[in-house]
Amino acid sequence: MNGKIAAVCVTYNRPKQLGQMIRCFERQDYQNRELIILDDAGQYERTSGDRWTLISTKTRYPTLGDKRNAATRLVSPDVEYIAVWDDDDLYLPHALRATMAALRVAPLSRPSVVLHPDKRGVLSQHETGGLFHSGWGYRRETFWKYNGYQAWNNGEDRLLLKKLEDRGVATADPIALGFEPFLVYPWEVSEVIHFSNPSMSYEKAATFCSRPTRIEKWIADPKIDLDHPRILPGINPRKF
Image (cartoon, rainbow, N blue to C red; front, top):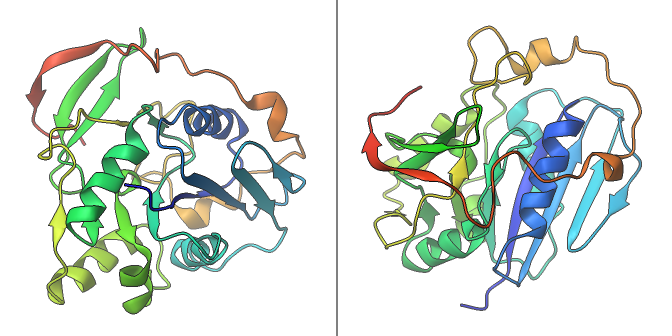
């Protein structure tokens, strides 16, 4: 498997979480990769690191769907596969390798198990129920064949999924292929502007003031041990 995959992330005013996500990307064990980050808070200078690029604009995109499409257009021409990464989630080192394996089987990758950390960094396993968009992946040609995301907020992922399912696009589950769960999905509402939280939305996020910062100073290891994560046995029903 030597195809190139791009992790694509849209961010808004979450430097601490974004810095930890970048560290997760730097620790990936799949080599032929890149990370594209698009910020529309004008919060950063254009910054590049080891196979990652952060692009910042002061022009707010009208919807989250528009923003995700814009970010996906920024990937390199030789990228064949797209992984959805979110700035407030964490990814174990085999995340892109697992997504790539699934995308070799089908045009859409959706893991069936997600990890939730507690305050100690211990991870419990939960069913995704087919959701948890930040662990999905697409073949690039399939994504654009069906015109990507619709101009929609907080539901653009489900609309895209419905469009793909209505057209008979096949899905592969990296967990069913034998990979351990790789998406760590925190639910720290007090610390994170979480669009999955009913009290928050893409529109409301625009009311939060952003302060100019350099992302380099925020890149740090998360609380969980990426190399030797403590994962509890047993898969529980979906938590959220």
